[in-house]
Length: 356
Image 1 (tube, helix red, strand yellow):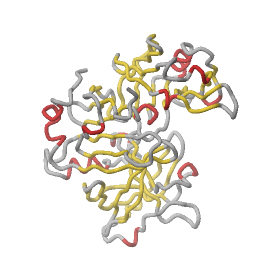
Image 2 (tube, helix red, strand yellow):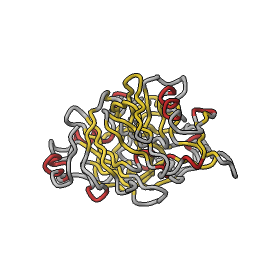
Image 3 (cartoon, one colour):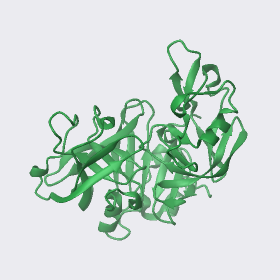
């Protein structure tokens, strides 16, 4: 795929860097566990924090939870003049966690962009996975073809409701490393101050998740090809990197001392997990994209252990054997752009966080 230099970027993206757009700061929670930002729902607007997730396609917030079951702020349905309860049930299941309640409709505003009559889940039964954090819900940014509600996503509604060509049909995400502030999601725009390279475009292989073709990996310059084409979901809502078990086994075969642990994790001698002795890249469409070893090393197996946990995990048997999930561990080094035009594509630019 062609690389775009910063010099010719505006011409290629046209109105994507102008027109109507909005940039929303995100907060890094739990040392890069997930990234959240505010959303305004209702009339007058109620501000709640949500996890920004390109790996799902539903917006939901906590509301009317039974006493002491929701620990984060909740949406008060009775205080919004424009709220409509459809009386339809809402249920969503994630790789880890679930949420259920009813489907509502109201005005939703993020970064100055408003989607009127936006469908969203008013959840009174989130699983324990969502407890004890500042986030009151989740903003799904994948394609609505996988939405549990069967309704358009927030940004799809923005694109449909604003004048044609007013909002550029893309959004982009910048993630910090171990820094609570500084991350952002940019709706209808691309922030050149957050990158140090042009964009490499990767065509979306399925308009479900933002999936691109993963062709393998590169370990210390040695190719580790995938035995079949892998559909890799670029997922801001996932912390780590998950690949098919066969590819994970082949990757770690190239790293001396690697041993498989439980739940898909591998451990590696800590001395082998530094940027001077190990370089690991993921291959998309035949091109390598590096993983920063600061993110690949998840820390010692236990206090005083000479082994460290490595950041590429093997997916379990409950997942398809041609699926990968590429999360924040990778995206901290790569500014990601999600473009609905040109047949749908994902753009990767070297982030200013990337090690030089």
